[in-house]
Amino acid sequence: MSSSLRSHFMSLGVLGFALGFAGCLLVGPDATSTDGPCIWGDNNYSVDGTCYCEPGFRWCSNDPTLLDCCPETMSDSTESQGTQDDASGESAPSSGASGDGDTDASTSAEASTAGDGDGDGDGDGDGSTSGTSGGPPGADCAAAQASPSTIAGTLDLQYCDLSGLDMEGVGIQFSNLTGADLSDSNLTQVDLEGGTLDSSILDGALATGTNFISATFINASIEGVKFGGADFSDADLTGATGTPMTVVDAIWDNTICPDGSNSNDIGGKCDKTWQ
Image (cartoon, rainbow, N blue to C red; front, top):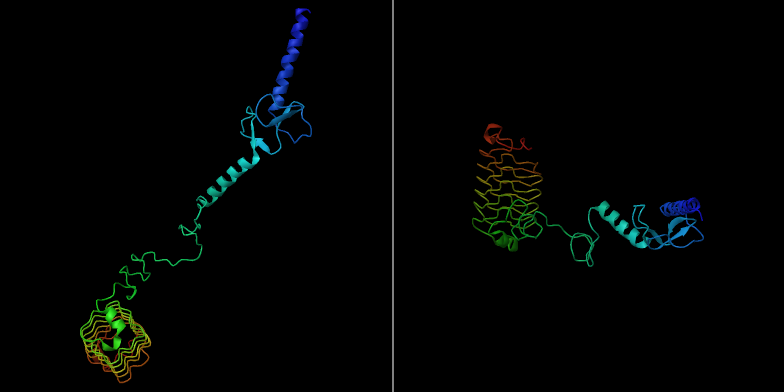
């Protein structure tokens, strides 16, 4: 064979190899027959010189020079998990976790004590549920709650929840009830002379004939209170809010009314100064 003819056949061989290699880099539709595996790579086959992945497999890489095919289930699962994590900003909960931020495996609603500081849920951080939200309850609060009709003397009842309790006739002169909740309580004929009830809540309370001489009610809430016959001589109601249900026969003498006026200067009463 002449050298020119040999050179011609060699050129044809190189050209065929190049065309076959280029075909393996193309991704085409599924084929129904195979010519055999591609020139390299795993889980692939060649049809008419074009390289495809075996059924159930996909290209492991977008690099066209790599002809390895990986199982579709593994790749899809990895991509799906990645998409889920990216979208939610958090990973799937581990075994035993409910996905609600704890590890108790329960998805039921749970009471929040955020900002409470002690976990009892009343917002005061003192570990006791007997106080109002304004602060820790006074030292005598628990005793007053346990036996409201027998308390006596000068007591520390600040921020104490005394709502709805019957304290009729008790003598608690000069006691501190700052921020206390006395709503709907029975204060009939209670002696609260010199008491401090600033920022307290008396809404709906019954205070008939109660002694409030020299007591202070600064910024207290007095909506719907029955003050019939109560004595407010020298008392200070500056900033008190709400309208009492009744003040019939109440005593106003040198009383500072809710609007800051003195009862002695406005006809001897505070019943026109509710706010």
